Image (cartoon, rainbow, N blue to C red; front, side, top):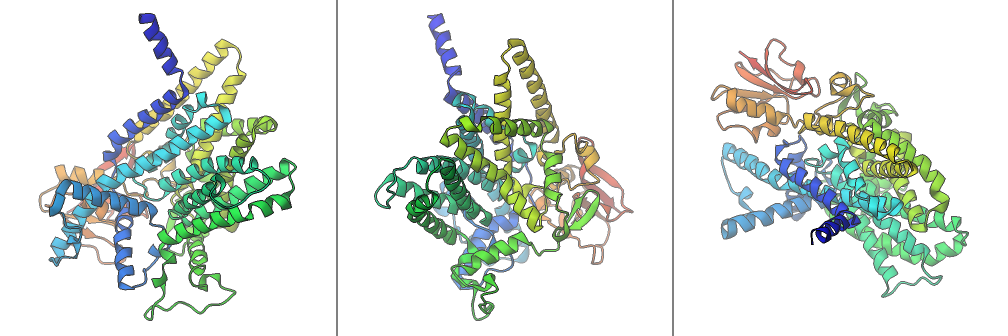
Length: 577
């Protein structure tokens, strides 16, 4: 009986699906038990209010102001809907979702908004992490295609050891959902291309699987574009993989294009419908008598009004972000419109753990060696993962697009890098036939992975400030590159003041007071400080995050506390008497 139970357990532990599920469950448990440790980013107030504000503006026929119209609402809509459902379930009929329209004093209104923001991140942060699990599941499936399902469990483990990716998945409202959806589109696209290449010569639209798959993929691509508009490139990636592999298979390219043209038109149509539905820039109220659109000219695609002009306007705006934002890069403060072309490669070089950079090279070399023996599905996978990693960063570098906040706007390439790195690790291990060498390799990898995990623990909950050995770690990078640019550590600084600050004191913050104020005791008064204006009257505490020289303000005031990780100060507290 005991032997049978042991054999059953051994069989279960060797089951590929069990190992994948165990890895995902372990990641989920770690994430969901620590998600409450993360603070509020400087962008989240705007992101959380976006759905409601856009709805109000559209219902009034008022154009959406500023750059809000250029950001998709897919994830924000899910987050707000989830919050409203949670409120209904917990408060029942007493809940009034229109309460924010009620007349209040200015102080009451501000407190109500802060409480709403605090309540929403308790829903949004776990939801952000749960959606990021799509990326972990997708990389497991992609590695399963390349290396066999029995090895797929390693992929989510490797992805979780990319500190910058892990850190962002708890609070970043745009980039992790985009990365998760992009990786899912890559996975689904590999199967779709494989299905296309195995289809019969006669391809017809109708009540068949081919039509259904094409339509569903268009919807999936539309959801991706509704997080970030650059997701539309996935449609080109599918076509490149399909027709490129068709040429490699010695098929008649003209005939292949002719056969599948209706299929691609259907995919584009469902993509366009989904994107227009969820992309504020496409909505008709962008033009009104009070806010007229510019004259239509053929030389200016952005002036082409709905349904096309908004698309080019959005791409143009986001690729050349016009706001006067500066970044700290290689020890210099630079406007984002003037960053050097090596900005993105340099950030990747100094923030991806070195072991994964080595495994990426190994995996790439072995893909080239193995490619001739790959199945069509494996080849589709390789092409699409390669395009996910390389295409958009190269376009941004060549076009000299504006970029900031390290590589978070290109976070979607990290799952692809994790796929190739994991495959390189697996194939390298498989080449070791000697048992002792295999044991040595496992030991080395375990030590290196443990070292990364140890650094992530030491940085918690600021894993996104990780720098690798090429940068000399956070301690050596702090004066040359942006660290806590999201302002997450303002929470920890505020919590210290809750315990140690004098009652009824004034707290001065250089911008983005919400990131501290929602965690503050009501006894404090908050003042937002702009260095261009007169300084506030003393006494006060100054809470300074590590960006835009904020910590250099009020040099006469002593620092009484610092939020530190690896002996590096993030947010600091000054006392100005």
